[in-house]
Amino acid sequence: MIIAIDGPEASGKGTVAKLIAKKYNLRHLDSGLLYRLTGVPLIGQKFNNNAEFEAQAIKAAGQINAAQLDSPPEIARTMQGGVMASKVAVIPQVRDILTAIQKNIAKQKPGAVIDGRDIGTVVFPNAELKFWVTASIESRASRRFAEYQAKGRSDSLAAVSQAIAERDHRDSSRAASPMVRAQDAHLIETSKLSIEGVVEALSVFIDAKLADLKGSSQN
Image: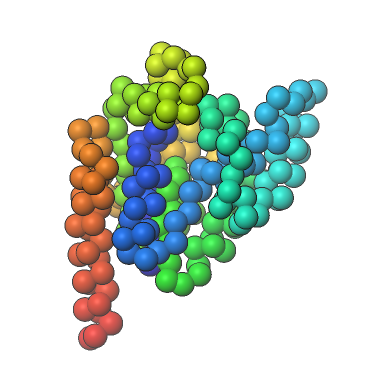
């Protein structure tokens, strides 16, 4: 079974995806981490032109391996990592390489829960279940700000909010696989829900789908 969970930055989709994967004994794949890992080697570098930047991004994407997903460097989860991820994500060749990695991991039984921004529309358009997990920008900024504070970071709430708004714009307006809700994705608004409440909301749909699949296999 493939469960696609898409949504914008800091919507809670990653945390929910991990919990859902654990609950249903599926593998979890954070597709956004692939883009963050691709961007990490490029942070702080200077490039003479866009072609040089793209070439280095494509090279970095080709060097991603499963071990990095299990223990990513801390900088991959920072605001810098997120900004760079959205920059490399507009490069079609990078997306092709990372999409292939996602498909290779997810095809392994018993399946996977994949969270990202184009999972249900591009990577796995035929996923058994699709969700669009979102929240107000105020809620998302507050969550990310709290995460940074817990890690001792000094980013202001205003800076975090602005970074998220800019990330939303880049992700939704890029030419290659823009962030958009799949037409058949279930909408889950998390602004006023606890993480347990979000998991419960998704579980209702998952349990129903599993019952349908079980019934079909018996006919």
